[in-house]
Length: 346
Ligand code: GDP
Ligand code: MN
Image 1 (tube, rainbow, N blue to C red):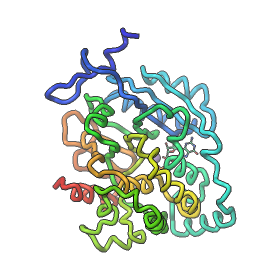
Image 2 (tube, protein in one colour; image 1 turned 30 degrees about the vertical axis):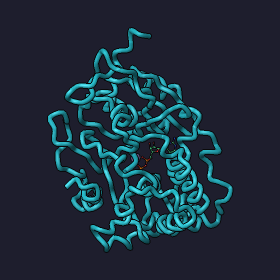
Image 3 (cartoon, rainbow, N blue to C red; image 1 turned 180 degrees about the horizontal axis):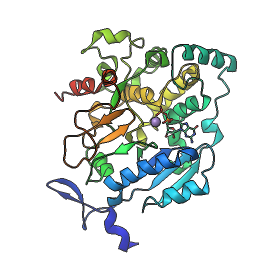
């Protein structure tokens, strides 16, 4: 419908990309949320933030995923929160259910050990399933078959800053494949064998390593040698994937397919509590050109208890320089300086 076109149009100006009359069409992209029916209010809050600060200018569609069907109320109220199209998708069992090669006794024993080490959610099967789905399954859903980019959004997250350019077009025009806001250290006890399995995988598949990789960021070899022992060689610093803007071709690549299958067979999504954040981050650090990874400093963001707050009048409610709304010790979890140092951002 041509009368609705200008909303999504963009024009290149000296200030970057602005919505404008003589631009081009929307990029092939979606906002993406895995969410439970019970999280409706949190989802509406996150949607309202992102619609207000950004998406009402571009109207990218929303795609919601759930392991059970969405309720009519969920569909009605989320659809009412945006002018853009909304799609509601059920995850097929074969993408969600614990795979047959996972030994139930070993899983139960492992859960006990993880709990003893205070690993949060370790005893929730659905949390393990969610991490596996976000790692290696979501992009296989038929609803995303023809999509190129996605922006992952979780219920209850906050967006603070007005952003006037088309984020997805920025990704495309600048040859970026992955965008993040926050990086954190992980609990080493949640991923003790993730790096050793990765090393095994690399011995079998050295061809997948990119010449311009971020291996030294993953191991933090240069900056803090003492961290090498943290999770058996991995610093545990990862892109915090509750915020994730990415090109789906990353995960559809041969390198990632081989890597995910190796990890999936190794069983650590269940015997340990491998998260999609360290899995995606290690894959990016090894198989992707590091110059294609972008820090969105201008997207003010919060997922409890961490922030990304730019110093800009365009941001409301985001305190510049504040990393966390919790106690100061949480600041130590923040490992953004590692990335900045690694890519030479001072
Ligand atoms: P945390 O951020 O690690 O504390 O984990 P969350 O509880 O926020 O879960 C991460 C994301 O997965 C959120 O978007 C949740 O809504 C979603 N999620 C987690 N478990 C399930 C589940 O069993 N079913 C569905 N549909 N979504 C889930
Ligand atoms: Mn969350």
